[in-house]
Image 1 (cartoon, rainbow, N blue to C red):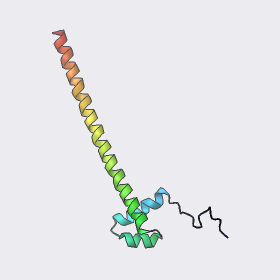
Image 2 (cartoon, rainbow, N blue to C red):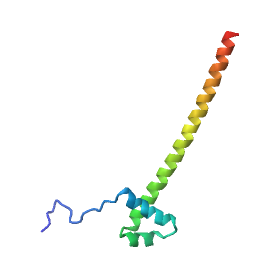
Image 3 (tube, rainbow, N blue to C red):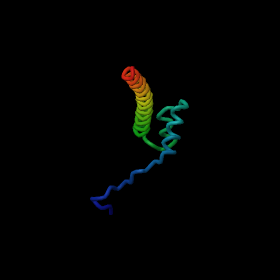
Image 4 (cartoon, rainbow, N blue to C red):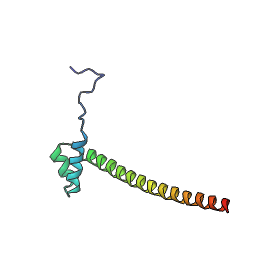
Length: 90
């Protein structure tokens, strides 16, 4: 008899490689339903992974843009400091 304090079903754990394979299958054009059935996971779980992956990609793109802007601003500041130093010496 199952204890009332413990769940009777165990939650499966999926590693990064498993999730990556699922996302690859989706990227190759298979439907969520096909991949879910093939991997024995729920459609909702695949949608969750897909959404999280999309969010991560957007975050990485945003970080890249911020890094590029930071480098541009550093170069601009360096030029302004050099111009100021030249004007001080003149």
